[in-house]
Image 1 (cartoon, one colour):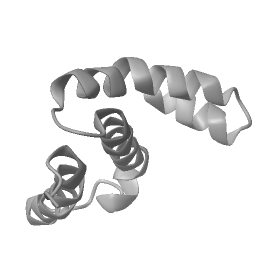
Image 2 (cartoon, rainbow, N blue to C red):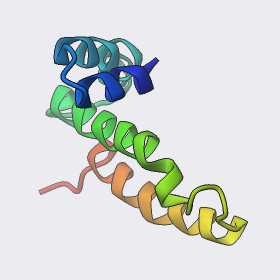
Image 3 (cartoon, rainbow, N blue to C red):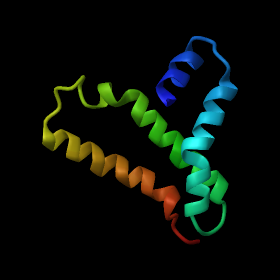
Length: 91
């Protein structure tokens, strides 16, 4: 459902469709799940990271030729990046 929105946006389609789809599929669920301050902002940041990964997965995994070790490394690096807005450091 998100992939057609991403492709459409790059072709000049309605950006509101992408926003609505992201909100429905990811953001609203994350807002309800997250605790602490800035839940909406953090939910949008996590959603944007995940959609970016989905959109570029073929490139990240070398067009399907990545080894299991490579995919684990991607998960390790990306997981840490996504985790930060979920459980931000306290100041």
